[in-house]
Image 1: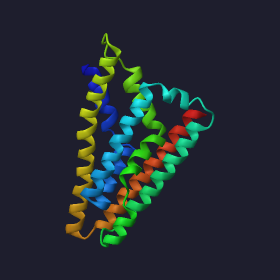
Image 2: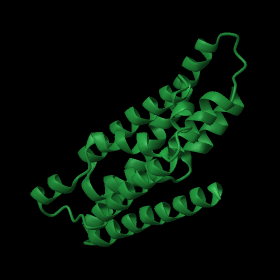
Image 3: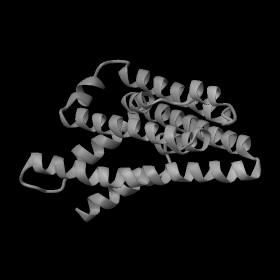
Amino acid sequence: MVSYIIISFLMMVTPGPGVLSLAGVGAGFGWRIGVLYLIGLFIGTNSVAFLVVIGFKKFLFQIDGVEITFLFLSLSYLSFLAWRIATSDNKTGFKEVSKAPRLYEGIILQFINPKAYVVQGHLFIVLSLGMDSYNVEILTKFLIVNCIWIPIHFLWLWLGLSLKKWSLHSSKQLWVNRGMGIALFAVVILSAIMELSSDV
């Protein structure tokens, strides 16, 4: 179980689209929007894990074109989110409301992100805790994964919020937002390269 916890931690703590977009949302739009987006990611992550456990993921990705379609949708959304973060200035309330990511966007991101299915498949199907009861093992995995997932994502949100507070005090908010947006867009490009090269 210790090995499972370590692997789970390492898979979730490294920067990826989910945590980096969360930090960007926190830096660009503040605490309230950041928490709502985090809740969306949480619901989406656990929903994907459930689909993996019941075998729906295996059926879904056997359909020709589904995986590449999901990849295109997720990268397109992340690119759009990167632009929204980079152009956010938090100066005008109406602008923030109209551009801020919603809770459901966090859910949708996880559903259309092929990497989310790969990670959950590894944690819930490939790795084993060696328990006699399959149901108890799955429930234990959900508990372990979420006990790691929640604080890690709150940490990334806090990092984004810290950048927001620092930048507001030093009048550099726009540059911080641009930096977060560019970083997220870099993740999009790297994810596309890695995914497409692995399919060749």
